Image 1 (cartoon, rainbow, N blue to C red):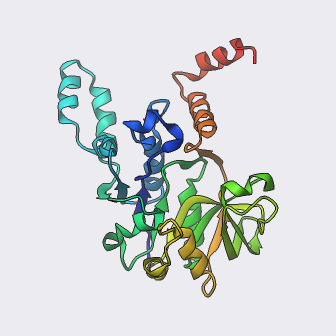
Image 2: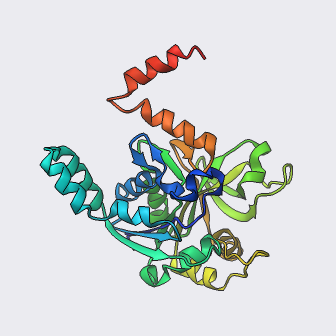
Length: 287
């Protein structure tokens, strides 16, 4: 079955970016002139996704407003002759069919996904976290969908990391199928340094199948009463195949301050209007 839907969990509190995220969603922090979540939506749309389901929480209205029709703003821009800007806004509104679901309590990423289960039941779908994206020739989700079409099993994006950083990630182990593909036998959430089963980390991109969703519905809550997708996948892979795919491209973690700054610099250097003057500015810093 073709994958046409993607869930974007975006209800987190963004505590690592306080005080900025006290009144602004972390997903709306700008990477040059587009918010982080825009890059995730672009990746989904460029991968054939037509329906975007965004899970929001309190103080996240700005996300809905961003993808909604902005008639008052367009009226003002039309009066000032900024037709090209109006066209760019309309492209955002027409990128996909947008659905917004409220997660009333922060009960984990698995709970966030289950808030939208009636919209995706009985078909495979993508899960894309709003602070994890790639700059790649082939969109990251396309890479995953191609493997899914071959294997018809749940997929997890993976990244090779230094073993000294394994306590920051979910980690995976399993049988290597080819250079970029692993058949997962074990998933461990943030193991202690020296106790990780491999150097392959879980990245915030998944393909979930209907039978995996059923496991998620019945997964045991964690000690802090959260429902976690990785717990459902760990249970599922005990008896069913789950694959980790290493994504080709440059990855950015904008949920981390340093990762966010790296993304800003990277995309500023790719921006046709900014790249030359910004390069010169970096040279002038004499770093």
